[in-house]
Length: 96
Image (tube, rainbow, N blue to C red):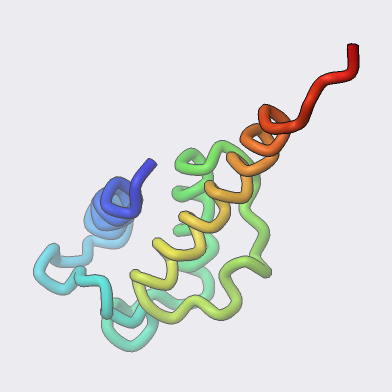
């Protein structure tokens, strides 16, 4: 999943779940200041984002998140971390 895919899905969630006008949604938009996403809304957002990564999202991964781009970056990092072990395993020689 690309950053663009994540951003597109995140935008759809914000419109559908929080009734945020699409024109307010942009990468530099701050969750709290610009989009009125408070801490309770943030928990709902994390629940909605879980299907994107296919595993439980840890709140620690989102502590430094302030903007929509921060959310995209955090999800991208989680997805890359998830993919990395499989790639590394394939690179390791197998014992005969």
